[in-house]
Length: 201
Image 1 (cartoon, rainbow, N blue to C red):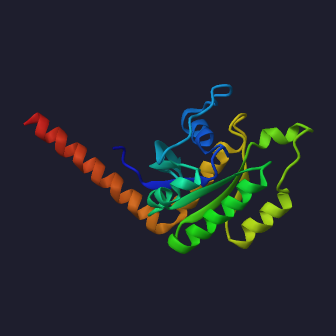
Image 2: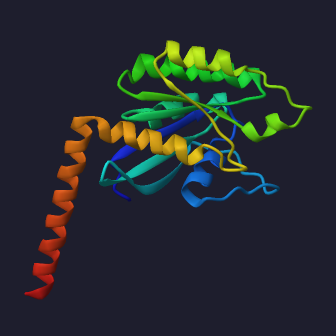
Image 3: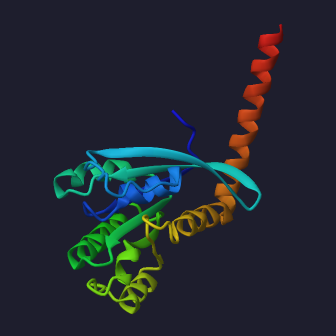
């Protein structure tokens, strides 16, 4: 399995676009007319990143949005350093579910940093779609729970990299995380040198 330095979990209702968000960030693509299948349990992807001169690996767990997989989702956010809690910008029910997941994180993973993410930003440019959740309401709520708020579009890619870069920067800004990454890099380098020595003997 790929080494993971920073564990990130995606939480939120089904159909809010969690899988699209991960796919846009990791693979820089949007499937458009080819819909994603519902995630069962969780999907995983990893991507190397660089922040503050350090290279490390983000591991992303995309959890199932259906309520029947709630208990399973809790398994995947254990030990997560960051959680992207998603809601559809046009769907008030998904907003309520986002708040549910935030309360869950506050109860069980107090050290996990929360990023509240509005998805499908591109749909608000269509006059037939009016935001269910106003920007002012969302930012006020995020400020109240000491979370960061980002509005994204997986279709256009707007703010997707910004969101994950923010997470990476916040992670490596913590001296403890910086130290852990440096130690991992050191150990990896030592292992490679040992392998070279073994191969050359």
